[in-house]
Image: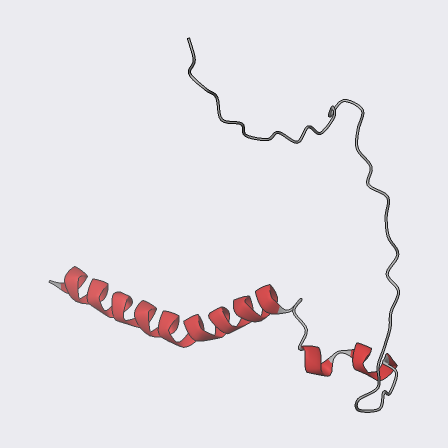
Length: 88
């Protein structure tokens, strides 16, 4: 009977310790996993943007890249569907 009471006491103490340390360890683990994410409102990039007036038209020219197709790909063929007549 003494062993059973000792087992129950140890189990209760372990559950109590896990109940106290579990949330702390979980909070630490979540912060570690999500630490690389940055809030866009707090990023340093907003300080480097140009100040623009409301309604101002902005034209930005994007560089066009030439399409690079490997020679092993082959040629592109545009197929058109045609109706076949069943004449014999």
